[in-house]
Amino acid sequence: MIEFVDVFKTYGNGTEALRGVNLKVEKGEFVFIVGSSGAGKSTFLKLITCEEAPNSGEIIVNGRKLSTVKRRDIPYVRRTMGMVFQDFRLIDKMTVFDNVAFAMHVVGASQREIKKRVPYILNLVGLKEKINCRPKELSGGEQQRVGLARALVNNPSMIIADEPTGNIDPALSFEIVGLLSEINRRGTTVLMVTHEHRLVKHFRRRVVEIHDGLVVADSCNLALEVPDEN
Amino acid sequence: MRISSVKYLLKEGVKNVWVNRMMAFASIGVLVACLLMTGAATLFSMNLNMAMQTLQNDNSVTVYMANDLPTLKSVQVGEEIKKLDNVEDCEFVPKGEALEALMKSMGDDGSVFSSLLGDDNPLNDVFKVKMKDLSQYQETAKKISSLEGVYKVRDYSDVAAKLTSLDRLVTTAGFWIVLILSLVSVFILSNTIRITMFSRRLEISVMKSVGATNSFVRVPFVVEGILIGLFSGLLASGLLALIYDKTLKTITGIVPFFQPLPLGNVMGQIVLLFIAAGALFGALGGGISIGKYLKGGNSIGW
Image 1 (spheres, rainbow over the protein chains, first blue to last red):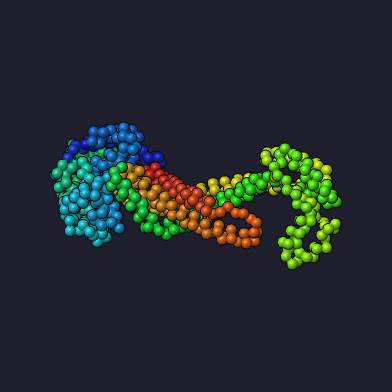
Image 2 (cartoon, rainbow over the protein chains, first blue to last red):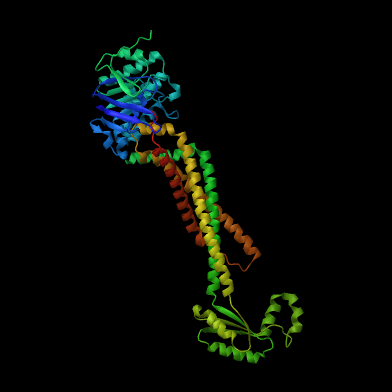
């Protein structure tokens, strides 16, 4: 599903963000990516979503080498991914329905498809009753569930979540990761960047730790020692 | 692109104009000013051209006979003029008739010249000579002036030459004015659209994250630019028509013999030109802004 082969990325200002990353994520896996600020997690996501290109090495997504993807084809690669952001990225002037439908408009879905699919997805994330609300009328957890619905609505094969619980109450964080786990159980690969060790410890999934541009631990190969915050 | 997408994008473009109506209003103001100046320069140049054409097409000269030449002798010279190859018509206006016409045109005040009728008439006998071929105008005028008894031949070639050089100046200045104002218009519009774009960068990042193509992101901004341009074009056409009409009324009031270019003859072209220019500037402005933004990368913003 996702494979990094000896990937190096150095920015123009000389910052070495990734220094020979090797990693393989299989279809249907749920992987937590952990690491301190500046470790290279964001660069890792930028490379998967084709926002940046590596200096060397190869990245393979859904069996396709990203180095061979033409610029104009990048949007179509992104359509196989659902992205969830820490700051939700909801458009305030739109209702919950319109925020989710927006993602379908982008891929050229018809009104009929949109009217059928959006309520279904909102029901899946437990927000059917809030369909006509504006984002500001929702709690942080609910807003993130709208973000999740938007990421899911085009039926992607993987979800890439960048600290999706970073802006919500700890209690609701479990709810969000629980939802991601349910989505994963239905066959969608999930890649989640997080700082919250409690979540990592609670959900007991594969954990990849990035530090100083390198994968320093992978629970797939070695059980990662997660320090207990309490 | 699917029809549903086209409809959606057009709607978004229209919505953009309304949401950013203050900036759109400012852009329309600047664009209308630019188009008005362009239109004024064009109309001025067209009027000059028409005046020049009128003069050039007036293929006649006025031949003044020497003041002391007896009228009979003048008539003989007229016969010689008629014999010239290029002369189509030669109309004789005796000095007595000319003075009477002058007195008549002055009404009651004309009677002061009554003492000049007869031998004391200070005017000259005149021939109005019309030519067949305009290309031999100068040559024929020269032949006439060399005839004995001819005092002066008055033609309009010097006026036409002056108008030509003025027209050349206006055309050159007009070209640069249009070019500079076009660049200014595109710059102003691209800045307006850039503001719209920054206010919508969240939407753009979401669009990019769910796999929007660059053209999908671009279209609403280009539509916004085109709409602003179209509206400016229409408004500028209307204003120019009003200003031109008022100006013509004022000028023809002061200079009655001035024959201006009728507005009806050029209005259609001006409206089309303004709308096309407005839409083009708008599309360029919108396209440039969003193109720069999309090229910048990091549009998802992890």
